[in-house]
Amino acid sequence: MKQRIPLLAATLFFVLGISNLSRAQKVEGANPDQASISASTDPKIENPAEDTFTENAAIKSLFLTLFPNATGQKWTQNGTNSFVSFLNNGRNASACFSAKGKLNYAITECRKEHLPKDLLEKIRKDYADWRLFRAIEIKAYGETAWQAIMENATGFITLKYTLDELEEIQAVKK
Image (cartoon, rainbow, N blue to C red):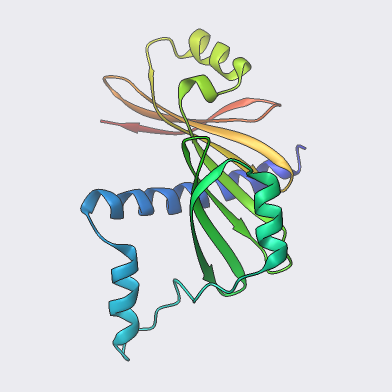
């Protein structure tokens, strides 16, 4: 597990960046589908972001097994990876699958009640003057981690929690 933590942390940062970019597009009112269409019609602009999704029975079968309550699925493809955004039990989620039908990662937005009890206890004990701003659950490489962004009057901190430990990975002052 200790050897996988750096890889999981790198994946976490990558995923958070993608998640924040996606959220920024929604906030700004941008339509990502429209942006990729207009970019692909200009021969001077390459659009590596999305390819046409090619149905893969192995991926769809694994997806339905892993997320039986998923609704509102939106599939895209980039190279050989397939991406899906969906609601899972009413929570925003996304997942990435390899061409061979294996889950690369899944990210699910969390509210306080979705976080592990041990994490909530550590937050209550060590971060009593902070409030939960945003949290996600990340499943990658057979491991699960949670990321919690906490806020108080002076700034934000980002916590990473695995079943082994709680780590403060970033602090930003307001």
